[in-house]
Image 1: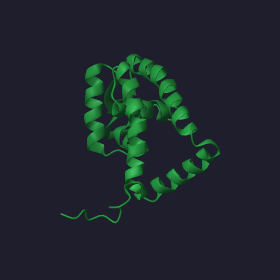
Image 2: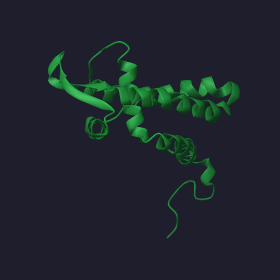
Image 3: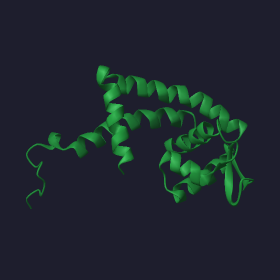
Image 4: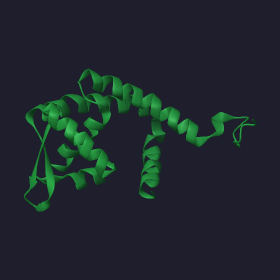
Length: 149
């Protein structure tokens, strides 16, 4: 079989391949550090999203957490269940919307966010710091990709 790609003679010219390689290099570091704290990356993302949104709203709906994290509602529900079992969050009836649940960080979840966030941000600083002066432009380009999808 002939490889049916326009990049068959130069894989490094494929933006998708290079992007996933960069993502995997960054994600490997994140997963390793978070596993030391006993949580997965998706769990960290959901807990951090709840903490971030809690700055402006005390009652965080699963739907608003899913929108903020750009995750589908079913994934958020599954992750929330595992975090509830672990004692990191609680899920109660939402006083602002009787048709939905609200997610709250427990003390244990708050402690994990406080411990993990500086670690993850340090990894981000080191990994993306390699871009030097182009880091800000890279962030702008990422925003453009996220906003158009």
